[in-house]
Image (cartoon, rainbow, N blue to C red; front, side, top):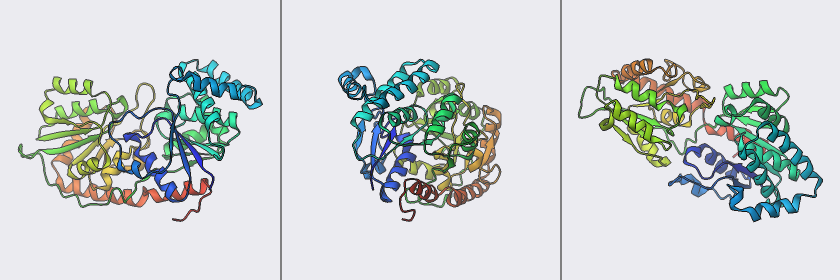
Length: 405
């Protein structure tokens, strides 16, 4: 089958294992993929599944001024083609509405991609609507290749409606990973082909396991283990978690896994007198995360809507932890209620409410039986409604692959 170019903002990335698992699954269905990354990798670690992916990776100029000859060569080769004038006109309309350096960089990257893309590529597919979606759209105009989109979270909620609408209407089709997202995007562009495709969880990477922790916070030598996984960014709400834990009157230990700006959180923990009770582990690979899920008594992820509109969809770490029988506490933000049914498969509290979060943590800390009930129900929920196979089958059909394994 002719290859498809996947356009990613960065590759490989620890925080985007859901993209890697999709690429690997589609390769195993027979899709020939070439990866084009807009950024060089920055993580010190990578997931083992990246080593199983066969797709070659090419890096576009992250900053145009660092590879001016590459950009100039592409422009010189394309400048006299009729497609160039149409693409430049589309870019100029966008630039007038969004006069930023990033907008200029997107067009430069599209020039390079359109010039260097192998002749046998038949489609462009962008993960994320924002920067990768722009590069895919401009490249499509330059090359005549069709493009499609996978929309996720930040890419939807931090760009203006006009940009989303025009990309949705230009793309052949778009998938998005939550019903909440799908309703929003379909409302912006009623005629566009928008489909809900949950990322789902690869059961082979997260085999189910009985979760039998019985700690209740009464033993200072064996404190309740609370796990928080995610980058230290505003939308994750980890500052609210620290405030909530400061008011919890039982023995606990917090384990945080994830990169980002940890400094402000560490400073907050010092102010609250919590420093000696927290382990800051940084970004971790799949195997280490799996150990943490299985050893934790609770996973807490107090998501919120950031000031710039950024928000999570369904955080993959919630599915991962729940698949291991780890009970989860989160917030009723965005699409999280599509996964966690409050009071049945976990607990949801309002965002930015440290008092409510503290009460929920204390409730489950003191009640190991209820934790096990939530853990079992959560694992069953993930297995029944969020298995990866259904989403991969849908995508296989979109890419004209055999829909069966």
